[in-house]
Image 1 (tube, rainbow, N blue to C red):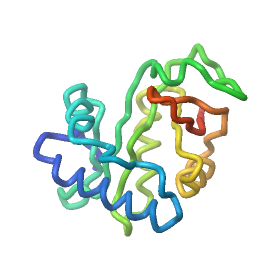
Image 2 (cartoon, rainbow, N blue to C red):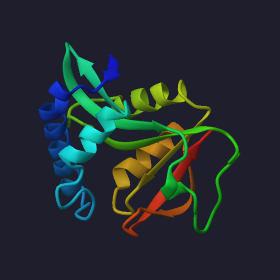
Image 3 (cartoon, one colour):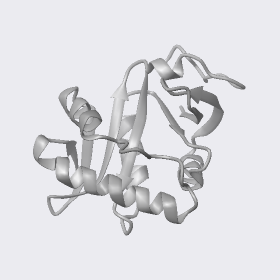
Length: 160
């Protein structure tokens, strides 16, 4: 089941972020989600704007993600590529994390996001080979490079 994240879910979401960090590190991704990212403040902001979701099993969160419908400022400029049908409304998937033994979580999040907008966008760190594989397996196409507000580059993907 997918539902909005509540304040009561914050400890579980933070633990899911920690588990995702462990998965990243074990796969050689040492540079993503560092220095306390994603923070409690980011999660609370996502919750306040109803952009944060949890996927539950037996009422226990086993995954979390942000799905933001509408323009994302970091996606306004794309280097070495372009967006497909840039006029279409889109939803952006951010901060996807799950327990290590969960299966099908990413696709469930993507399927959910597709109910909100005709176009999906996502980005990931160059070292995050797992997420790159998942995005491509779902049918996302690599579109170029975007830059976060702090200037860090990310590989941008889109699915129509």
